[in-house]
Length: 398
Image 1 (cartoon, rainbow, N blue to C red):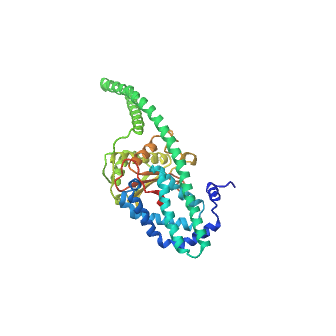
Image 2: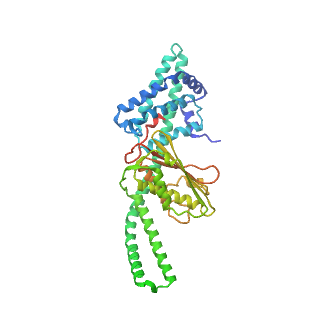
Image 3: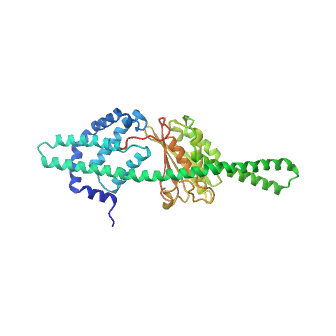
């Protein structure tokens, strides 16, 4: 079997079974100090303006983040250092990209932890030079591994994000020119249709009326597509105000036609705290997701469910599931790219627009495979007011 990247990194830095045993022993010594280290860590961040700005929710979230850092240190010294550990750590590098955190903050934050844990080793292993040396070396290797993982995933995701930005830029230039040009002939068609209807009056037979209605319907669809295209390339200012997700969801339900045999259930939204955001744009998020879910189950019948919960202070989670066929693994990586669609109707703008709106609200969306058949989308919203664009915690804190 081919060597995984994590195995290669461990071999490169020389991390082996001796290091694992040494870190487990250090864990028992260091764990009582985790609360103090987390205070020192975030005190250092709060002293630095640039690092402080990266905190999700500002200083009000420091208490929660200290607890998260303690969990991170517990995993760092306790292991197991397997592929699941690697995947967990990769998320930190991806978060750095999402919040546009400069890489030098990673090194600065890691150095704080390195110094604090080294001081604990020196105090705990006085008179035990061999054990002290091994503990110091093992700590250095695991922290080097942490940085290597973060930098690798940071680079990978940054390249993906840059490629996506370039595609969107080209896409935007094309849409901006074509969209406005198409509006002119569509306007002429709408005007001509209005004149035909007004002159025809009661003398037009039922078949002709049917075709006039069809023309009007298709013009409306074309205008809707152009609007979605233009929404993808322009940054409409957010009209921030207190928003209740339950009310936004109810408005979305009214806007989406549901055929018989499609059941929609809701749970937990009414008890969620208010958010700060643009109710109209958030309604569009739920309309797009609900339309996709309904279309996925309408042929055979099925269920669409929406469950909201407060997963931690300052963060709301909303999970939308359907019992349709789900999304194939080959499509998932490109699910949120413009013009990517597997449906017979639609041009693949719904999910990219959803992600764009959520990111501008400081939120996220991810596809998570559902057990059995069906699709599952997980949305996160910050409860505290968010600036334009996402904010998140300094990820070296885990």
